[in-house]
Length: 137
Ligand code: AMP
Ligand code: ZN
Image (cartoon, rainbow, N blue to C red; front, side, top):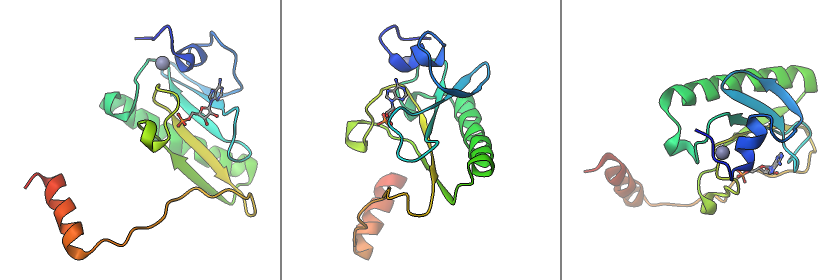
């Protein structure tokens, strides 16, 4: 299914041009227009899924296998020093385009980027409580 109002549906299906670095029957991989670092790319499914929760399992496995393949190729061709794979779901998590995508972010020494978080300091009981909630106990 495609969403007529979704820019990533249009890009993934070739209705809007993009700098494509990979394409098959399910996915297109494009260069991000606002890259965090040189070579920052996005894996876009050609069908519309808003986020990871909507993505069917077989698409999920294909998407992450492709992420590994692209990261390996980019590491060799762009001589990266490291690599971040980022996937945002929901506004609070930084998602701005509501069509599932995986960020492939090559990293270079002294690239000036900081992709991370401020570590919390939970008590053992707080960790145990979260564990119980996730396990449904
Ligand atoms: P997110 O914040 O995870 O939803 O990521 C959206 C990403 O899409 C951002 O990194 C944007 O720079 C990128 N982006 C938005 N529009 C386009 C576009 N037309 N072509 C390429 N990248 C885009
Ligand atoms: Zn879409």
